[in-house]
Image (cartoon, rainbow, N blue to C red; front, side, top):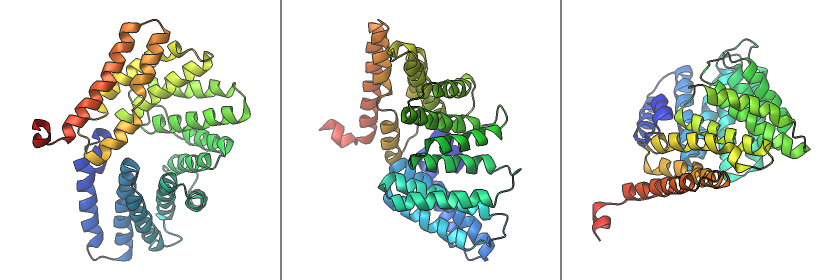
Length: 306
């Protein structure tokens, strides 16, 4: 259910996963099994916090994952995963509450996770990229990019996680270019995002974001010419219109709407710059149409008839 939610964004799948994992965690068992169950539950609670920007869900995720880590022996093969999960939950809460203490704790947990992870571990790339995300939040763009590069080097072409790490790397590189004023850094960012948008890997949301980043980089590298990003923008809006809101529950709908709120507007601006007035109007109508559909879905029959 958790995996299906990541691909379909159907809110009922996420709630079903939480209910099932909570029931499993509440079932009496030994400390090892309980730690496993708590870890699974904590990860899904963190996803709920991300989707709903919920402090309550973030608090629950952190508490649950702290308990999972406490129950895991220091020499356990599962220790690195417990620490990485906890670090990710702390980072999520820091992003919601803007508490620097949570951010510092996240970096500490994620660094510790890497220190107990074997060099040939299949999970090392994931842990590296998580640490990179936390470092970027601290303003350490260069170190963040280095971690994402190291993660990407561990993932072979065609690996489903590459598109996520490529997106993380691009975000860090853009931040580094803005911080240092070195625009040549954007060449590496463009190469990474070119690969990301050329294949079918990743979830629909990941592909939309990759196309959006691709358009942004094309505009930046053209000296601010919005028309340079038009084709990538049109691909992004077409994909977003088809998949971004399909089966999305009310709490997740707000997340999806906020995530893609300006996408159609950006595409319209690019079309206008390219002299394509008709395309610009189509993009604005597409954005408005999605908004109306989402409002209609949330109204009851009584509200509609009043």
